[in-house]
Image (cartoon, rainbow, N blue to C red; front, side, top):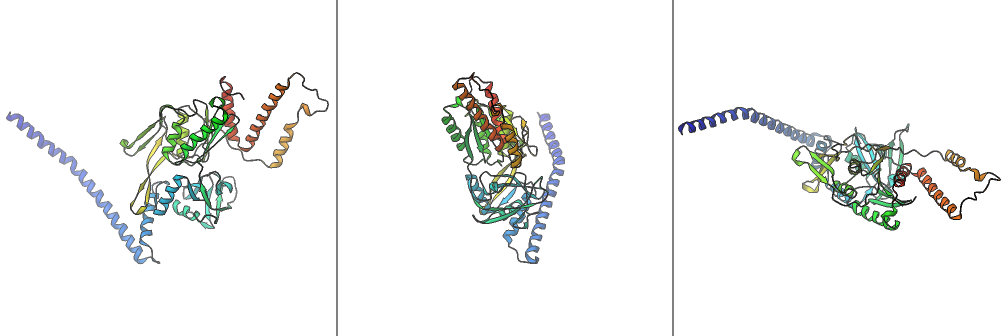
Amino acid sequence: MKRFLMAGVAGTVAGVIATTQIAGPLLAQEAASKASVYEQLDLFGDIFERIRAQYVEEVDSEDLIEAAIDGMLTSLDPHSSYLSPDDAAQMRVQTRGEFGGLGIEVTQEEGFVKVVSPIDDTPADAAGIEAGDFITHVDGESILGLTLDKAVDLMRGPVGSEIVITVVREGEQEPFDVTIIRDTIKLTAVRARTEGTSVVLRVTTFNDQTYPNLEDGLEEQIEEAGGIENVNGIVLDLRNNPGGLLTQAIKVSDAFLNEGEIVSTRGRDPQDGERFNATPGDLAEGKPIVVLINGGSASASEIVAGALQDHHRAIVVGTKSFGKGSVQTVMPLRGEGAMRLTTSRYYTPSGRSIQALGVSPDIIVEQPRPEPAGEEEEETNARTRSEADLRGSLNNDSLSEDEIRQIEEDRAKAEETAELREQDYQLAYAIDILKGLSAFNPTGPSQ
């Protein structure tokens, strides 16, 4: 028994010595790291006091500290930032779907303010602002080198007031000015309509209204069509949709999926990762879906497009999306302010991150720029001449009146599609895909 006891004691002593030998350097390293942090904080305090005492003009201490906090956050990535109490309040209003401004979603790229996308039916949209534009000046004042929040502050102002922004656009040789009148931005999250036998769901943003608007809009269009059997498919238009709430992106994806993963998020700590799965139920009842995206489709839009693409539930058409694959958490701070901090990356069901890469369409379709009116008119005139226009041409006496009427109706539908193609080539392409798919489905609606 004594031997066992001695062996136990000896083992314990040896263990203490070994632990001490390993832990000693680690503890010393941690202590040195803490000392370095405290030294840096002392340096910050020293600089802060010198600025307050010796700067050429008197400065507000609170503004100085807020600027330091914002600088610390914006040094991390373009999406982390400090929100003052006013900014935090405005962000809460924006997620509810109504706010004042120009109607553009912006980000920062190498010090420049870049338009992610204009929002539908807003002053910026009406003024012709495009995704990918760079804004260099506001009312003649350069915004180069400003933080994104400061640049946005310059663009804010009373409803009805005028602002002049200077834009640099790819393909344009010189910068140009755009005059915009600020207005109250009321976001209609989803607009639903029917083109032929295809339901088009135009999703402009992901806020609290998005899923309820989508569900109601789709139900209304199906009802007007006389039932889902009279619908050949759905176009989910996410072009120029800058994103928004992750929860809404999950709900919209789940609306068309019966099972499987929608998206996963992974932070620095593996234990903080989350997976979000679909629940049974498909609002489209298995009808084909085409998702439209472009360079202005970001964040939540990319979650939806990536999920439906990975599950082969939709064909993705358009051009490469923006490539924002990070998740920001808004954390309330004392004094009514908040901190927007990038806390994780999100991954599509197949495990791919689209950060900086974007979602690649299954079918790449560019949106052509409109041609000069003269050329269009000449081409249209050239296409309209036919055998029936020739003097003395024979009549077609082999068809009944009902058959002729059916041909004319089909021709009218084709002409409507051609007209849509002139207005929105990408959307017309998506609708053509649904028509092609329904042609192989004998139970689908007639064309």
